[in-house]
Image 1 (tube, rainbow, N blue to C red):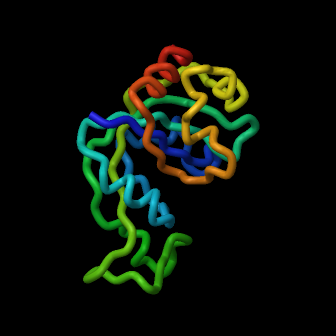
Image 2 (cartoon, rainbow, N blue to C red):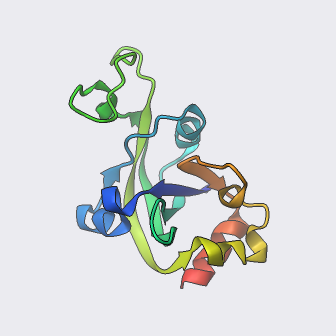
Image 3 (tube, one colour):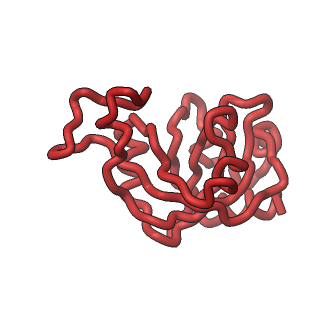
Length: 149
């Protein structure tokens, strides 16, 4: 089972929104590396739900991958802000995975994450990292969960 971190802006779609929805497609990923990470996800994988572009940014909960990668339908919808005119149903560029809430965590701010020795090599804390989907090691995932429990 792999471990992941998924970033979302809480004013767009936060952990509370996921809890209310019960399950949701992780739409709008328009970076090839992040998309490829989603293609590696399997049903049962766990992910840290991270609130980005927030004051402060940080960890809100854990979600579970409940359906593997499939074409993100927003890429075909001209009314969607995630529309991609170069993508077609015959040759889709972008995927999503479906996630469900697993456990709310005590909020852990980015500053608190930076103080955790287990995360010194974590991609989340790497300078210039802006990916919305990143893999975590088991140790990184476990340290975040322990800090938020």
